[in-house]
Image (cartoon, rainbow, N blue to C red; front, side, top):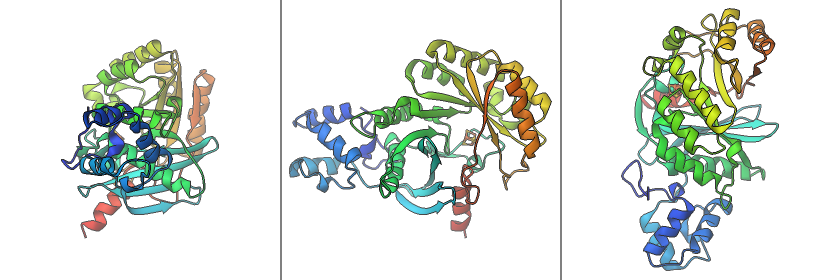
Length: 356
Ligand code: SF4
């Protein structure tokens, strides 16, 4: 039973599945059915202390408190955009800061969660990787982000209906905690976020794509692709050296064949780098025969890097080429353009400020 924490502290109870709580209760000579009551307090009533679990005996509450933490993530700062996007910077128990974002869509509220403190993948367009990887989050710390966002949404009686695992970190490098997280938020006795409403995005850790094809159920998979040739992808994403494009495409084809599910490709448009008509044609050659969807992401200027925004006309030209080749393509709507909404920007800003 993974009742461990990434920090050596008592683990957050949010990282424990309903079945594991049952097991723990039985080991502690209590009734398994109480697990359902505890889950209800945690995820439906959303209490923030064991003492509030009024139909649970005092003795059991004390046992729970001696074994688990229940404290919510500490909010360091919060930015709210005029378009409704909310970006939180949370502090973990060991002082590290992580980002979580609420994005508003016409189909619901989507929560973007972080899976690692920092990242070691080294994508050249990403602020989150600049300080390297500090540590993995445990499952409880990932679930706690959704819960914190849900508590914020509770104020307006709204629901976190979708989750995207696209925040800081490479989720497939923290696979076991990712899988526990997915199972906990999907549980219909808890937060009940449907698998089809969850998307996990990877930079392309090939062996884990094969594993996810087996274990991911109906959860959506997105690949950060960003380039149509292996040379260009290596320039933008050094991970392409270890996991080259050709092998990545094999893994994606396997995923689609195995699951029957459509795969998504994230394609950031970086001015002058990968956003020209010839790149669109090459991309269509690469993925045109696959059950897939392309999400074009006009990338903001990244202060730490030299990339600039693609001109509006070029964005539409790129899209039209993919359209004309029969590829399902959308342009991602910008969220929170008036706040530090690009991945890692708020955390980087905070690190600068606290460094004095
Ligand atoms: S884009 Fe994602 S995988 Fe790449 S460096 Fe940033 S956090 Fe890591």
